[in-house]
Length: 88
Image (cartoon, rainbow, N blue to C red; front, side, top):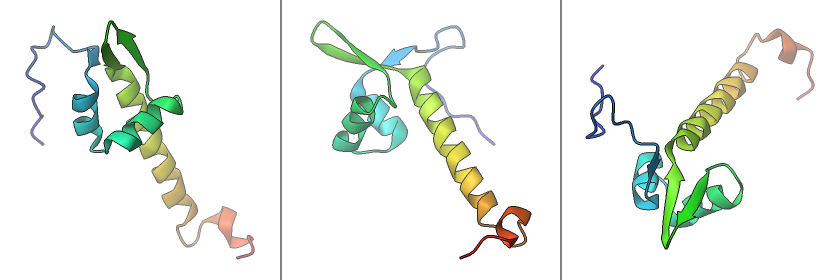
């Protein structure tokens, strides 16, 4: 699988980015993105007038979403011993 380029060399991994870039990375709208910040799911801070988004928090958010979706899929599989006795 080809690896996407960030435009940075290996020793220049970005720790923060601007909100517009973070929105593109997550493929979400501005209202959704700022709600994620308000809910504490994405970390950011102000530097002067500019808002900076912590890239590690984007990775953490995506990992949490993947984990949540994976556990939901496992719960919904037929033949799951935990669901066999559950009432529907």
